[in-house]
Image (cartoon, rainbow, N blue to C red):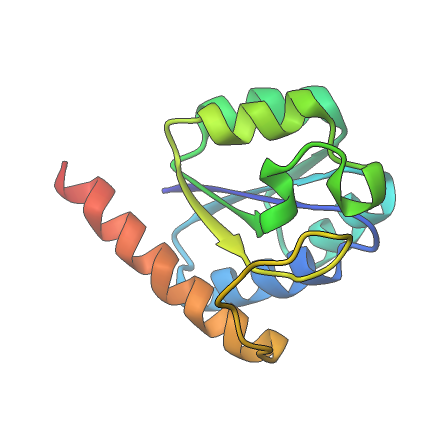
Length: 140
């Protein structure tokens, strides 16, 4: 199972995701792609097998992933304070991978119906969704 984690800004959410994914799915191959080098470095320190930074790595890695995980802004052009380009958002949205999007209400992207939850609760739910996506893809 190849999981792509995409994050930006300081990479804090991506770092926490990778640490949790490594504990829960030790067999998974995790690729980290940051929208900036600080985010990429944080995710590599968290245990990603490989990492890269920028628009083209998001485009290429999105084609190869089984599951893509990150904040909801990775499918919205100009989100994460402008770090997500239209090409990045399109690549993630058009990927054949399952997408697990963390509903972060920031940067003028507000998700209706999402209550304020702790990052821990969001990570736990994301891991459940990753498990479900992995099971569905293995049965196909």
